[in-house]
Length: 178
Figure (spheres, rainbow, N blue to C red):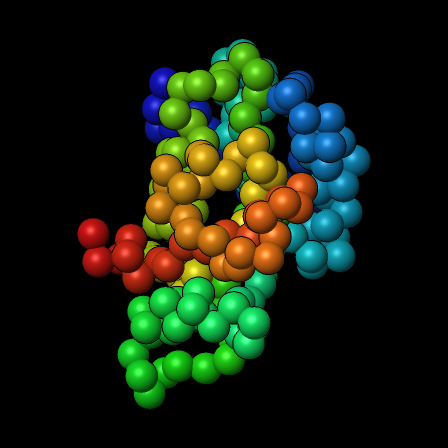
């Protein structure tokens, strides 16, 4: 089912969150226990995808500011990343938006909603953007790395290959040029 069939709602401090359960208890806990606190502290903004007739939260994602920083030990990756930016604009840090959390309800999983949400985030930061932002970053759990690769994300570093999460990025210029 397409993302257009659901209501897209920015979470507010007084939002009553509708039932939601994904396979990851940390992601469930963040939505119910932390998302509104992060909003209050201006640390992250969470967006809900809701099925209003069924009174359910279908999915959610949280965004926060980030940056990609030059790591001298990862020169080859950094050179690849920097080549994407016009020479006079190259720097040691690039502005980014981070996907802090992205979760789909078990009931609505495997319907392409994750891919649609990534596409929506790409659109949000290339159209009517309110701040300069060249990249999307994510610290992807190992079991989600393949999903992010299919969505066009690359690894920021090879140092985290055996870690619980992998740092990945997507160059928004690619989406803008599509």
